[in-house]
Length: 298
Image 1 (cartoon, helix red, strand yellow):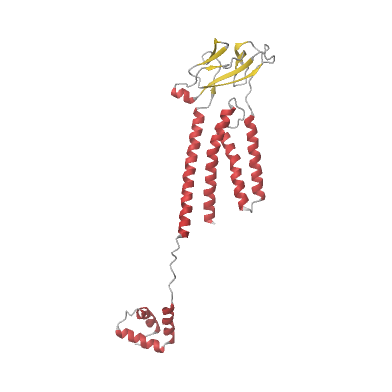
Image 2: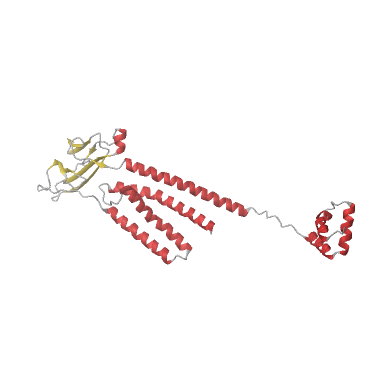
């Protein structure tokens, strides 16, 4: 039986490693002396170089670092969303529910030296008061309102303390209890500054201006992103700025709904800012995670 080149080529790896018997070794040796094809094949096997193993661990470290950062961002996103829910819950439980006037809610008593004491009932969890001088500058007019909330009713206790109306001894011309429903204020102490009636305390509207500012900033950022859609750096910066007014608008919607007027505007404004911070961080983390997976897919 004639030994073909295919048989010799199958034996060549063992031939190189000296793993053949003497008879097989001699057969291969005799064959390659006369067969140039098998000899060339053997030379190629001898000159073959193994692919060097890449021992550089830097790429793997970079991948590990990116995965770690994304994991941290995911954790932060979860924490921020939890904080948003927590703050919303606190704001809901402590949201003012304005009380209609009755002596059970608040009474005014003179304590001497011209000082007036406002005594609050147990179902009062907070109050608001503002003052201004009379037209003839003979005294000050005060407007006061009280409220309760869900948290106070659950705990069945109030931390509100009695308050001195005029701690600096200002002369009090009148004290009104104002309604939070648009009705006329009720005189509870002193002389009516408008005997014909019509004293009404209106809600503050300054939060509406911040809504307008937020909408304008968001619109400008959106316009920049449309015009510069090919510039990734500008898009990235504009998106981060864009998320600020969006966060404020979402926070306002959560705290106040579609209403911008408020009788406790300062409280509501800071509540909106607090929720806005957590929403912004959450949206920023969500944007970064989305960009990461988008680039990964591309």
